[in-house]
Amino acid sequence: MPRKTTLKTLPADKPGLSQLIFVVLGALTTTTFAPFGWSYLLPILLLPLVYVGLTLSPRDAGKHAFWFGMGLFLSGTYWIHTSVVGFGGAPVWVGPLLVFLLSVIMALHFGLAGWLTSRLASGEPWLLLVIAPAAWVGVEWLRGWILTGFPWMTFGYSQIDTALAGWAPVLGVYGVSAMLLVSVSAIVVAIELRNRPQWIAIGVVFVPWILGGLLKFADWTEPTGSTMQSTLIQGGISQDRKWLSEQREPTLRFYRETTESHADSALVVWPEVAIPAVDKNVQTYLRSIDEVAQRTGQTIVYGILEANPLRTGEVQLFNSVFLTNGRERQKYRKRHLVPFGEYFPVPSMVREWMKMQDLPHRDMTPGDDVQELLLARDGNRIAVAICYEDAYGAEQLYAFPEARLLINVSNDAWFGDSIAPHQHLQIARMRSLEVGRETIRATNTGISAFIDAKGKLKATGAQFEPVVMSHTVQPRTGMTPYASIGNGPVMVIVWLLLAVFWLRSRAS
Image 1 (cartoon, rainbow, N blue to C red):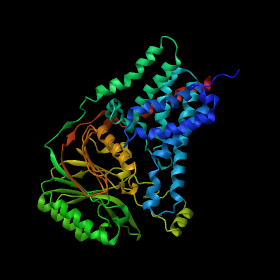
Image 2: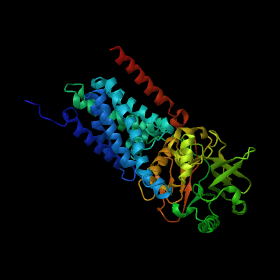
Image 3: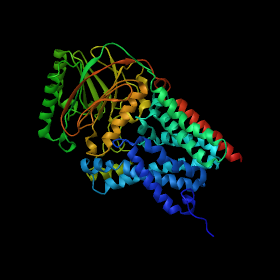
Image 4: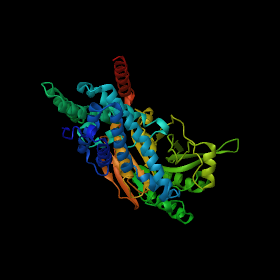
């Protein structure tokens, strides 16, 4: 008589149906991130993912994890279609193709994590407690770098409002992911064990949450100096109108006049490429902004495209942020460019085809890896991240402890009315929490916000309309453990664990 199929035996008895369910589970995982925020649902959704790593063969576990990843990235990054087709002008078929290809690449990383978990755990429940967190966090880190990298939808971001967020200033977002996987793995171990050690596993389930909750009370950094009145300005201009010639003058007038009307703000921040022009073409306007800063005593920060002519006749184009404090003009150049948006990692023949199809094909130039911090008029040093850079927190750590404030400028207008701006704001919140600094986040169409040093939102602006928002910000000094050590220790432990258990599995 054939055995009765249960939830525990479904992956082995009916793999096709089981893999379809995993696609659904992956899609539901998107709801644990912003804007939905169903954070506490994530451990439940990850349970089957970790369970198949213990109970199925490496190949079958990898297949299930792959389909989970497909569900997650198809549902969580559909907005790429809006960016490349709705505003980028690409043919309609390009958007779905890019979303699908990206989802496949990311899902392959998930498949690797599932395969590794099964291969190294070898069906031994207690090994799962170290192998599953190591495999999943290791692969999360890898997918942030392989093939230009895409660290979006890292599990730890979804936990920004839970007790696990207490780990972020200590171990960073990957440490939060690791603690989540420890807890989920302990649940699987407790389910599988039928003897006394089961209670030990149940205890392990709660340890990351209890310790994380206690860590949230720690103040890793401290206020320095007096608070600063700051204003962020959001133009609310849709991407399809931003570069129209008839829109330029109203845009420039809006930013200058709004800044002048907030002369009581010591720091005013405009979004990424708030000025829709190359700097050399608007020098008269830029000088007028310098004069405003000199007259009012303000520090004004704004995004603009910067052209840098070379002796060869070529011109480098930077996505830059300028700061004027009435005495001098400083600059920060974006370092981590967006693949297929700001540069195109394709062969020359493909680039020529893109040119013939009237598609974007010109590379921008990245800024130096280490740059001088921007200096406000009152002496506070500021670390800047432009748009996509905010997803690479470790690259910003060189700025500390000197930096006392964070500024994140972005142009999420590319993503329309989708979930992407909410996801991006969640990432910015994690950056504040990791380094214990307040963030001023100015975007072109939203979501602009003031974020405190604990990653909490102090104020947010509406989307798709002009926003002028003022708030006091508190410069801070000191170093969180994560700001001191970065991702290094977590990743060393991860790769050592995987190497040790890989050698163990080979020997056996």
